[in-house]
Image 1 (spheres, rainbow, N blue to C red):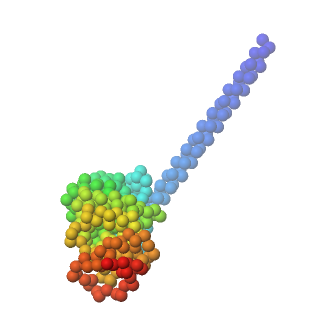
Image 2 (image 1 turned 90 degrees about the horizontal axis):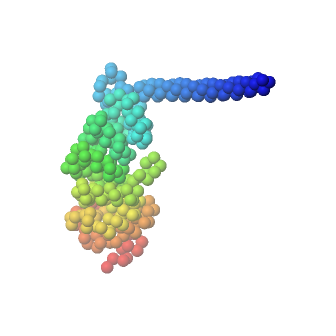
Image 3 (image 1 turned 30 degrees about the vertical axis):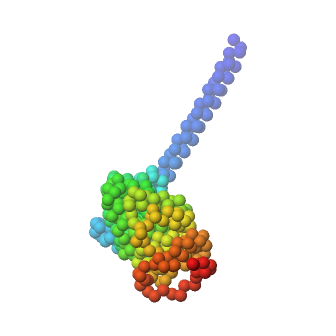
Length: 331
């Protein structure tokens, strides 16, 4: 019988050790869970309070977002840093969570103060960022109106093309129909820029080239083959798609357009200098974009040789120093 007490004592010791370990583990787990829950609750409370303070219109200021006073910096800042301009760049689950916290008036707020951003809404920024998933959600679940233009007449379709987002253009087609999208793309803003000219200006956003040569070409193919948009247009400055591509340094797109010229441009298209007398290669040369100069060299020679129409720039052209070797090679 002597060994029994030792066995009993050992069993009790093991039992106590296991009990203490489990208790400590449960206590630590509960403590951590409570701490995290409190932290998240406080964070969300501060976030919601900030959203309410910054983005919610007071009832005494009226129901339309444009009636908000200038003191709401989200509407009057020259460099807007509003929720509507950042939301489309968030991961989709987070964007949906924030959407659920915002009042309906915020979703249709129109920015003011900065000429380029004035009148943009959440839909415009969503198209600009190329967030087709969020765009579909806003159009179908929240029933926002993509027919609304910015203050200078820029459409949601224009900014979708600016971001090189074929998927956004397809979403607009699903909701409004292809004919409507074609009309929006062909229409111009007050600077006479259509969707094709917008697409040719793809540039950096958020530190990434969201509208690189490949993305622009994909958008061009969609605009040409599906939307049936015209590539012959010029804006108020006399800029063609070639001027814009040279300004933005997209030599790959330029080479593709020159190679497949007949697929994109009609017989009526004429490449001329802009209203200040600058050809596409001049704009590229000013920026040091030598690849762009080379890409349009042969095309410009063709028009400078005599394929120009009688339509001349609205302002007498300046004396343009010739691109080295260009004029000398004319036959």
